[in-house]
Structures are given as C-alpha cells and as structure tokens.
Image (cartoon, rainbow, N blue to C red; front, side, top):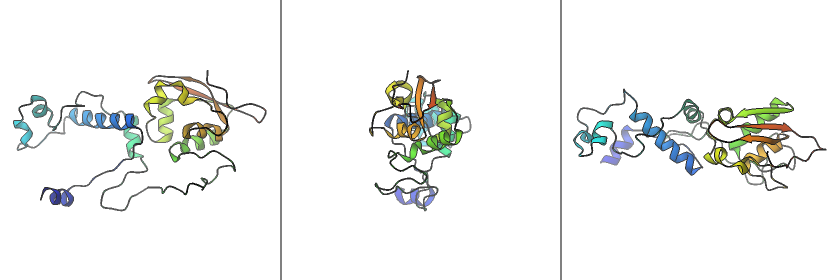
Length: 210
C-alpha cells in the first residue's frame, strides 16, 4: 500500500553522477540545504517530532548524517539544473542523449581523434571556439562550461591535468588535446585554475604541466 501510494503521488528525478566523491558531495549538500531551509518544515503530525533523537525532531529529517555539511553552492545548483540525464520517473526522459556505438565518432571530431566521454565535450567545444594562443579558466568556470561539478580528484591531484603520451589520454585530457591545446600550468585547490596553451604541429603537446 505504501509503494502504491508513492507511485501515485510522488515523482522522482534521476541524476547520473559517475564519480563516487561527487555523489557523496551531492547527497550531503542536498541534506544540508534542506536542513538550512527556513521554509522546509515538516507537518504538525510528522512522526519524527516524537523521535528520541533530538537532531531528527529539530531538523525535520529522518537522518542525522549530512545535516551540518556545506549546503549546495550556486555552481552545484546550476550543474543539477543543466544535467542532461535528469528525467521524471514514469515519463519519457528529456534531454537525454543516447550513447553512440563504440566505433562511432562524435560529429565534428577530426579523423583519428581520441575517444572522448560526452561529459567533457563542452570543454572541447569551448576551447575550439575560443581559438586563442592561451586560455586561463578557474575550476568554477570549467564547471559552468561542463554544466556539472569536476571530480574532487581534479582539485587534489595534479596528474588529472597531465598531457599523456600517445593514445592513452583519459576523457578529460582528450578534450583539450583534441581541441589543439595542452595544459601549461595548473593550480590545485578549491580556488584552483588551469592555463591552456595552443600547440602547433612543430610543438609536442604532451609535456607534463608545471
């Protein structure tokens, strides 16, 4: 009966978040956002008001983990709104792009280019359109271009921004290499940034970032 009521009265939004760290951050951020929302109060008959755990009774939520986390930022909210994989359960998905066959090449890509995840395609398109000798972007700006947060490893680990040799590029690395750029330098941390520099045929695009 509970399941039947939920199907008849509730809808669900599904978001694809491949990175585990990003999923954990999204969950904690959503919980904290609701907890800090002055208008998000339970009804007067909510059974949680009688919970022996004061944090449940006070917060209006059936949990305690994540209550004191950092609420979602504006960048994270924009990423959720712009998610291409969100759809309402029980209806046809909207703005969902089907995955092409493994041997198919994304439109507009040069022959012989690296196989790249659609997640970082907006970054490649941005760099191609910019067509500048050098481009500096903050992590927040890159997230805005992608429409979703960068994985935490992008802020913590310099190799994430490396320029690999041969055909061993990861999806994010293919984005700037296929656009004609290599990472010249990167600053890690929450307020980090990355500097891309265009390379020519006479230059080797695979030097490690400084």
